[in-house]
Length: 564
Image (cartoon, rainbow, N blue to C red; front, top):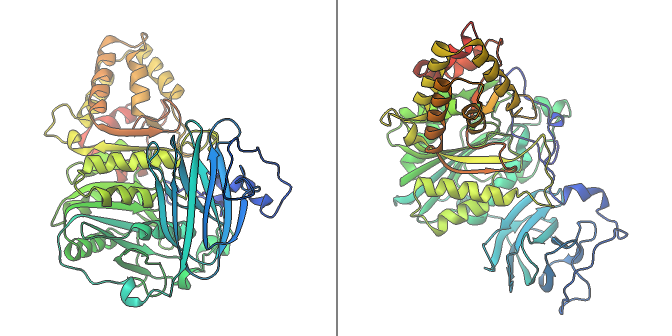
């Protein structure tokens, strides 16, 4: 498996993509893996002096300062400026230990990340300005790397690291009983591991580095993967045997310091995560046992834009229609739905759940296997449990932007550009007469009733020019709404009536986007739409799984229109 396999699955469900077909999203460490034990790697010398050690922290993984077996260390160095954007140190822990790390003493912004030996980020802290950054997490025996980095000016810093040995977590500690108290938030994570097992383990650890509190419940349904998974057998992915290597489906509360070992959670057997009943049962259990004023549902797994939580064993997935049916049948409302899955930032999916959730967070592009940063995301919520759904959605997007910044450490790969958006679903409801779905329907109607052949040629050319080729080119019919319609509005070759209808789409669209991050200036603005090329009949599978959108708008009529 590649170090950052995207969580992206074949839209027709005939087979999931092989990990080797994805462009790896490489951390600064992963590009240097082959230099693990090399002492000959050259490194730029830091412009700052450090008083407490005889060597500078290295500027590359290969040149990382070796701290050996970590106990208690305080390091002073500086970072920032050309040739010195990152400092690296490596250390080892023997046995299971708790790490406490603090970064302080800055005069400008600097942040810190923790990576495992494979180069996967397992924790990080990204405080604004010169505020101190802290990491508190449990580590298994192994080698780890600390990266201190700055995207602003030069600054000195003090890096403090200490560890303490832990005993094995008991079954009771791993599975605390529901308290009966009503929290501010319950965050329900529906995690379909499939061929991404190693990443789910790291994300569990990120969640546990924060843990549930009296104000925030973090509950998880976790489906791990058996050794006979088809991709493991074919050598397309690797079975992760850590933490007891259990292979069933479990659910439970994620408490501070818990691990995904054999004692965690309650087994529900081998569940089909692509089945609507499995999702409904998890939500009913969560909302009954961990009641809250606000509920967030995060789905972790493979996505294809209109289907999510692909289960390779059963060849099943949750469609937009099924998802809406599950949410509509709950005893309470979901405030935020988040998709930690590829390509799910589509207007069709948002439309399907608009009446049964308030905020939707999704990506128009692939999401790396390293996914969201749950440590910082949950840290924000625990620190401010009074957040509204809109504020929480914005926080998720902001933390994602910090995790995958566009800078020298994260070079742009044209085939894998990170993006994430928070969407106001209330603005898409029928109670708003100027909602996005209605505007798209009116645009389709205007084209079918007023377009000349010249208009259609210009519209087709615009669509082809601004098709984003999402999913590394595997989803060429997904087009960014903002990018497309702004260019229709500004195309003088298209008639006034159609351009006016396009402007109405843009206005409604702008009122729908709460927050947007994209790794390039204008590639993705918030939501994609399925827009098949002229002369190409729309996919029957797409029309089937998005029947809510199909039935409520004229968009599919336009795509199937004989003149288009």
